[in-house]
Image (tube, rainbow, N blue to C red; front, top):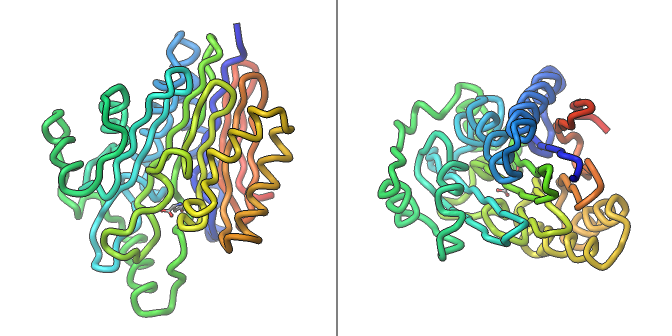
Length: 293
Ligand code: ASP
């Protein structure tokens, strides 16, 4: 028997001081939702899906309801999920407005296709029983104001600080990872970040499960998650490896952000080079959350 564990993040970034406690609390609730699945004997994959669904439903995060918008004010969603035991994976990019993109990734997880994008991905979801919701129902006032600020040049166009991700280890020692986001605020229509890309924003195998958040282009160019998983596989200490690779993303690829990591028998590990990264964890022995270093 292994030690069940759920670790989630609610995005790296520059969350305003008055919203920080709320961001951390939401992560704790998501980790608890994943924990309930594991406590009932569920799999790591189902725990990751349950945790991410809670965060997608929470308008505070840049995933599902409350997601960031494209330059032309549209909702396009990126999501991925990976089963570390079987190495099955699903990534969907530039999806239309669906309430819970992680459920679509779950539906695609054991299909032969690994990555789908755009209109065809949206149509695939509809063929598999998912219904788009009115775009307006996913856009919060806070997001609209932030989008306006980016558009008129008074706000930062960087990542929004609210992408969500989860990693889990179940009682059988199986690992899983997932990530869900609206991407960067004011992104170019058609732009895809690291979050739906297996090996960049998300990765899980039999030794490590990883979800990243931050400057997507830097995480893509540095092939972040796959590199970190390989370090763990070849015996490097997980915590130092996580820190070193994030510092490398910052110093050599000019991108800041953070990530969560669990291994076959270790964790929870988390590290970020941005100002904050909200996170929460659950084990049968205890739970917690935080956001500041
Ligand atoms: N990595 C995400 C992206 O580039 C954004 C984020 O993590 O906040 O789409």
